[in-house]
Image (cartoon, rainbow over all chains, first blue to last red; front, side, top):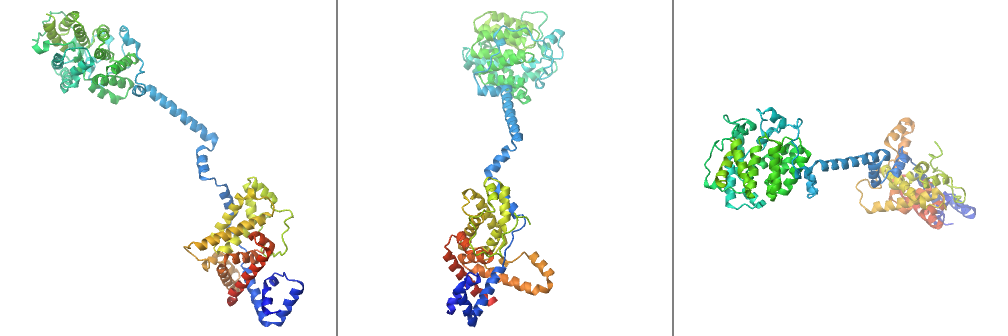
Length: 407
Length: 215
């Protein structure tokens, strides 16, 4: 056996895989060949060194870490687990949350007329009371506080008035049109023939002009001045004996005589926009609804204003602003050209709140509507205003109209 | 140490082919693991973690990387359990997975630049954890020199092992460290028996040539 042949079987010799003649042959060669014997010795040392590397163990907890990786859910499974597990806890909570949100949304929808109007603009329920004959005067609303921004409550009310409207500050809330406002309205009305349309209404609405608003403000300011009756009732209390227009006979000018049927509109000088602004922040449902109606009236949206005020009257019949709301409802009707319904509202105010500060305004507007319809009974109403309420701003206006149209 | 945690002995060098027809001792655990029992698979991991980790460590030379690779091998095996039909022993099937994974990963790492520690770096080839080495040195003070020599030689062997090709390295590890029989190596690496013999011979002769100057 040659050396290369012997070294070629070193691997099998090392593994003891040789037997028989091959094993004898290589054994004899190694015994006789020092070079191959040394090579074989090196081979065995080298292989022993490799084998001495031995086995190794991973760090403790290796198997547990592998198991954790096996059981680690995927990202989506982790998210789903986080959302839904444990089912018996999270699903009922989630269902309750959904129901709560749905209930809150429904409640918000029901409590917010603006939201309902935005969603169903044409499905506002109409209060039936507004179309029918005026209901009896509502009992005193003890729980409905008077609005703070509308001035102090009447101080000198008679017991009867207190019974009718205990906390009503109506004329402060609905200040009567001042002379300036009335004349402004008349001047505009004279320039365009009265047609009873909403367009005419818009052109003569005193609150649309700064002058009108200023007049409204002035009227409030005047009521607080010394020398003038402090309370609306005192200011507009009927005169004990009609003097046949001798109260304060103002000389009607040519302009002021040309009183058109749009004369009722001076009551719009009650500055609805300002009231809407002041009532909105209170965020009470009644205030919101009332303020919405005022805004719609000022914007000439008579249909919506009718809906709003009718809804207000239906929902809050005890509110101190009921007479004001009826006056404004009448204005909205007038804006729609529904004179009969407007008259109905004005008459209702005068009948249901006979001692209320809105009476002169209601009578004056009623007279203007009648005159606009060619009904001369309006003249008699104007005389009543001038005689019974000589202190009211409407008295001066009434005398002017009387002089111009009732001679 | 329990049966489940007992590592496969590496000193045994069976030359006869494994009794594939005999009952696979892992059969019960494998069946449970295939049914989704992670605990049963954890037992299998404990049983073979030493073998798989050793193979990975000798192929890569770094304990951290070897542990990661060993985890990947077991995860791969777990995911492939449903394809394991029991035609061979579980250990043979696992060795095949480990062998191919090691060779593939080693080749992939050779193709991409390494950011640290080339395969032959001495620091990568520490035979044991430093604290363990210190303890051993303290406990065996009279034999400290001999131990240091052995550690030094082990580092050299590991470094020279890393200089072999992947084919030579793994066949040397499987045979001379893991103690697999030729037939098991053939099954693990899917080679002919004659190829195993010739390749092992060449790998051994190369290793002998590399180690002779240090012996």
